[in-house]
Length: 197
Image 1 (cartoon, one colour):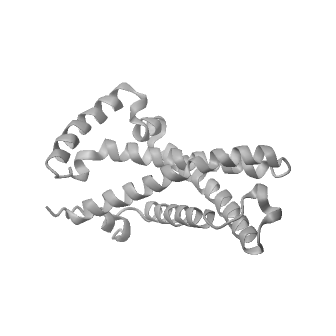
Image 2 (spheres, helix red, strand yellow):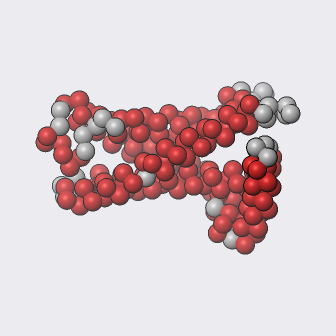
């Protein structure tokens, strides 16, 4: 089934690309950087990677704040209902209405179309935004505790707990986009093709 490709706005495509590149960068750099509470024992490269991770993370936190503000303006009071549908009865009902056919389709090894999973897709995006918000808050808290290494270490341990969920989110998000693209729905093309004026 091939559907018409609806290109996304330049703002959405740009913010999606920046978030994707920055998140992948943060995950990769964190594998080789020095832990901030162990800088005295680290090599110069590890310290530089930590500093890069810290500055990219703080910049990403500011960009995430701007994105959340833009989403709040776009969806007004419905922003939480759109991205966190399980918080209200109508959202839970809509989500349950999508999950039943998804389970049936999975049993037949036939994934549903993107049009059949709009509430679920928004909920998954909400989980991604919450995960990034978790990293932003814990990362900012760590940067404010530079002179209190023990507290920074405890916050850092919490900060690191989000790495696996974020990796799973990225794999699932990208994987589902590729499945929908393979099915001819054009989701990847929507993010890559500029909108015609």
